[in-house]
Length: 61
Image (tube, rainbow, N blue to C red):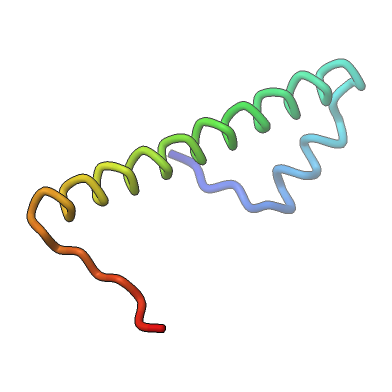
């Protein structure tokens, strides 16, 4: 797989038509939402496992 820098990606992005830029941004936004959802799911699974194993760790006041 070829490595692309942020600057390379931005240069390529600037060559796109307005319609393609909008489509690309929509794809990126959807990917960010999916990534956040997956992070929340992973944290929820970790919390459930900690709860079932009685690894409760409450902050001290």
